[in-house]
Length: 119
Image 1 (cartoon, rainbow, N blue to C red):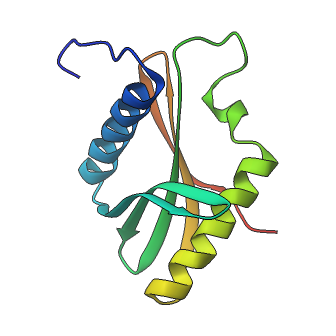
Image 2: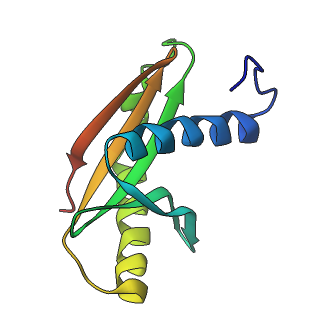
């Protein structure tokens, strides 16, 4: 982020997504789309790892006052991600898929593979 601290939520979110994308690319994933939106849901990053489509939620927390980044991936948030993923797969073809999270807590980046599964 070149030492510049984003001043608004959108800029902060964009910066977090860029950190996550670079981290995943360094791990061998390919970014297919960013901020895929449908009515009722959004996916921050859609990636490919081998033959698997990976739907990635990026969560960022500067402080732990209200729990860490992982705590913010609630069941309701998971349902919205799953809804958006179903739309992606319907448009782009059914493939094996999984749901990952990239958590950025106080500058530390953690990639959780297979963070949750559809019910």
